[in-house]
Image (cartoon, rainbow, N blue to C red):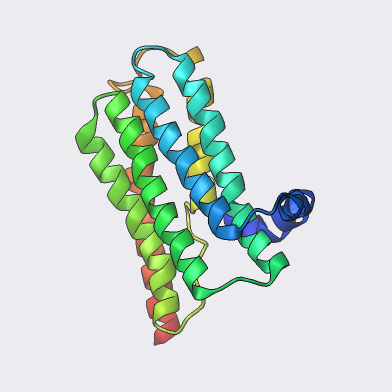
Length: 202
């Protein structure tokens, strides 16, 4: 089970924020862009975390804000009745770049570039299989072992507690092990989605 399965409950929690966004005159595309900028800022914070652990805490807050806004843009589009394929495309493109930046920032902050590459490919393949299922006529897939909501929650949680857990465990910091999880579980989730879609097409 992934956090993406709780989107209906999240939509209920979002209603006050959607109403506020409407009053402020925000647009769904504007919210998507703001979410991306927060992800970019989080990546910068994680890069500098090697010098001061407080940057991990800032990065955690920025990542969680990115995840919240990523839910808000879709809910706002539905409220304003302006949801479109173009907006959906923009949202997905910005989400993928956000994923890349966040993981790159985490990897660069601990100088684990090969591990970062393995993690980001797992994340991107998971997202690709989710939307590719829709491209071949199936529903978009959000499930699997590790969806985007789960990843953002894990990044926020791990980097929030990382300053309190110093040192290495079996040669890796806590953030390093997070990248290992993304690398392994990400690819397993991608394969899970692939075989699920393949079975649905058979």
